[in-house]
Length: 119
Image 1 (cartoon, rainbow, N blue to C red):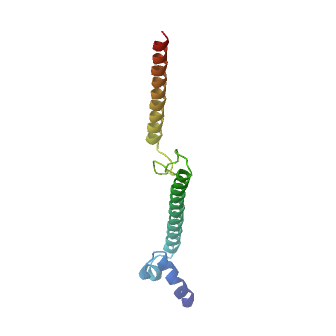
Image 2 (image 1 turned 30 degrees about the vertical axis):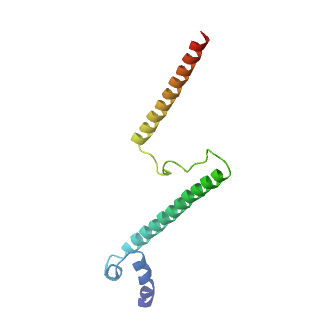
């Protein structure tokens, strides 16, 4: 039986447990450390995936620009993949409303200028 514990002890140390915690601590801690380790690995994998996406976007922008696409550009803000808070959602809605107001004001100005020219 001790041989089995000797065999898995390094694995749980990899999970973040100390030698003392593994041998003398609460046995239920092993499950918690293993779950925490798996969550960390998942987060590292997501970080690597996101980094790959940033690199892909950068290379795509450079290639498109080199092929003559003048509108090709790298993204201008970080990719936000976490759920937004209520305040963040409200702020985005407010910014969108300001864009619409600005667009409509520009249209009114252009319309007013064109009407002045025809009068």
